[in-house]
Length: 277
Length: 311
Image (tube, rainbow over all chains, first blue to last red; front, side):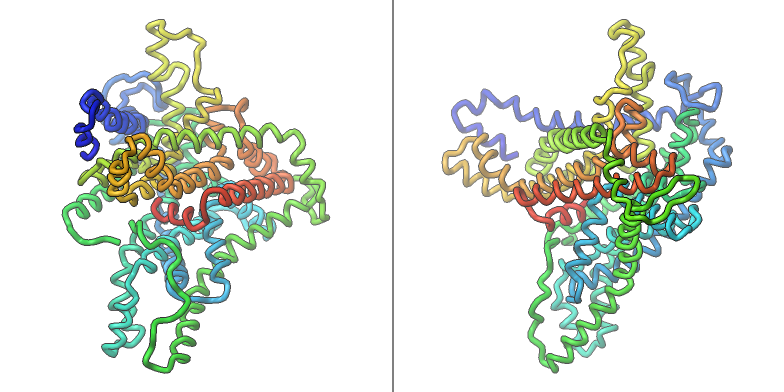
């Protein structure tokens, strides 16, 4: 706490209570941020008479956890979301990895333009991507549905994977691969045994990011979905008639899964003194 | 995730080689093209061609029932704009408030974490990001639920007669901006944190040794050094927020529609594709112009990408 040591200055002691302002504020901010999540979890236990969420809390029940899969539309929307996210992440990861490798360490004609397109793909409002994809699908008369959602998701996932891998590649010490080649490794062997292990965490992070982005996406998906539902689209559609508490339960499950995976990574990195870059 | 060396890698001169220099250069070049080809093709297919198709769509004329045909109908742009100024204006206003609000909320917290977090830095940052493991749609729906006219927040206050019964938060611009700020906060917090974390505390000590008081040290050392983060944070919140329509629809209702709601309605409900495409293009052009003006003043494109990497 460097701030406290400045108390040697005249008047420093008078102001000492101010050192609680910033931490206090930070914890208040965390409370504000987490409130909707706590409400989501709490109302997943709401013992309401019907099956639409209400502001009144009737008492605790585990019914909604037991009856989680009772709404076939919601279940199939949730399944579609997970399947699309897995497929989109699996396909966009190799595409983005190759792109990230090429951008991170090779020169090629159109490299600047490619970087620019990737930058635009990440920075532009989602609605612009959604409407341009819909324009294309309408022009080529592609039937909207599962396939168009999957294609769109691979589309917006790839630049993110590429950026994550590119960062890892350009942070890598190139002399390692040179050393492998000096020790008579063929380029392929040098890549597989030196480069790949070093950039693997980047590839993994890219995959996770792609999966999460895809699972979470609403705007682009809504534009290209046609009659197909994903989990966020189903929740959106259910708002007018009222959200069933199963949505809270699905949300809680997703939250706990994501948070524990990330938390596990965090704990591991805290205990391991490995120098990350 | 990587926080250093996200800038452009040195790709120009190759390291000294013992074998035939030309052979290796040619091979490296071929490898570059080979690696880039699939991804570049994919980007062409899913970003450039759709963008061209959108421009093409915006110049078509016809109707939703009889179909559209290409006629260089530039009039679509004027027609799309008429009466829509208010929605563009509202989008601009709400997104500026979002960029500003997220920054004001996030800055003190990430400042404290970056400078006084010690060993708990990553845990504290994780706590800030924790809510964002819940999907965007559910977060927004939960705010609609919490802020509801008789919801868990206002309901009890009204029962205790602390608020008049007709008091509401939903369907006001305040609710929309609150939702936007909530949803975009990590896009501000992360780049700010990265920028602040990079500042060497020794610089602040040096400023104090040179008789700067704490305010001066903050204003003349910390703040200027955090500008790349400020730049990235404003872009990553302002730009996406301009096209957003979910908060405006769920928390604001028809009286608070942004341009995104209009584009969504024209595209998905009324199927007036040319008008919708024209609006979307104007939104994008507006953003490109605004961001490049802003970039001139404060930073470079690299910093935005750097921020996106850490997000």
